[in-house]
Length: 151
Ligand SMILES: [Zn+2]
Image 1 (spheres, rainbow, N blue to C red):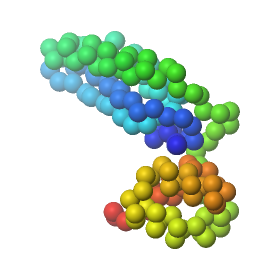
Image 2 (cartoon, protein in one colour):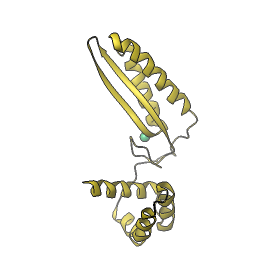
Image 3 (cartoon, rainbow, N blue to C red):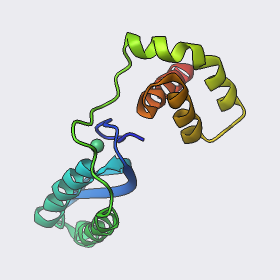
């Protein structure tokens, strides 16, 4: 599958990171939740943790929230340490003309299987194998189709 933050095709893990900035009487919050690749987990964890530790606890509520957020972040970070790194040169999937030419003959099959409410990831991998494209490309196409349908 592919990372929901950078889009790169890589093994991912579902994580939830929280950042708090205490401004004495108010606070600023930012959260990241989703299936992320290892480099994004690493980057997000350290960026949020640095903020939580330095300015996260300035305020009454923040004094409680910042340590709690930090604990949650550490938990998710430690749990994802075993995650495999993306293979060298892994990039975000591209939907180019070559991809559409390859996947076009399999579109009916793809839609038919999704209409039967089959598992999204299984259908994606199956169609990718038949069409000779990557699962990340098929997933990206489906996300684009769903977004268009909702608009
Ligand atoms: Zn990523």
